[in-house]
Image (cartoon, rainbow, N blue to C red; front, side, top):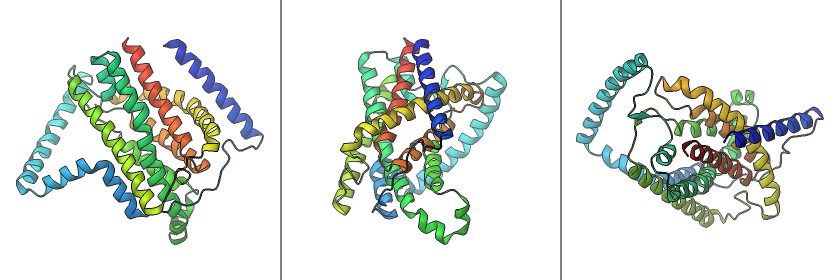
Length: 316
């Protein structure tokens, strides 16, 4: 594993030297390319968000209709907060997590508990194949694309927004939301079968959400692959851009994760949100500058693949 990390850091250093060299020469590191504003509206974004999260939304709505359940949830939440504060104080004085708790990602816990090749393949299919495509589709293409299309109008109406450099409102807000959704606190280690079932469910729901959302936009606006930022004649170039972005950001994010993890574990929190926020910035900038989604997907896939590879090698 040390050899892989060494090569990765060497290539990353070379990438940053190339970036600095081009910047000093006044050449753009990533050429900005104009993109036609996306046609979908805020209502369409809400519909697509529902397509991705309908089981959770319907479950919460059903629970909210029952006053008994609402009261039980309120009492449970109050008791949970009291227990969490007392437990946090105890664990801080004792030095962090107990042996039955973890802040690690469920995929890591699954690989740790079940080291069969079938488990590794399942993690790769969901975390490297499905999740990056689904998440880049909804976060960058749908939500950030809509914000990019509306940014000029909002800047014209709200003078304060003109103080923010153009593009940073859609890129930064989506990255912040993306990081928030990946936040985790300490929890009990789940059984491998339960994690595996959750992983399969997430993969199925994300694949279903992506396909149905694409069908919805296809029927409503007639969007095709080019409208979704996928250009066949530029696939090779987009793959190279995504790979260079991976080499540039992966090692710094790994270092940041390693520095934050020991400190945040004392507070029973995962270190993921801050590195993922910076990852979200990189993913958003790729879409904003190129107008195409493939570089962002390649970067996302590469980072998830690296995380699984390092986890697998460290456990074996």
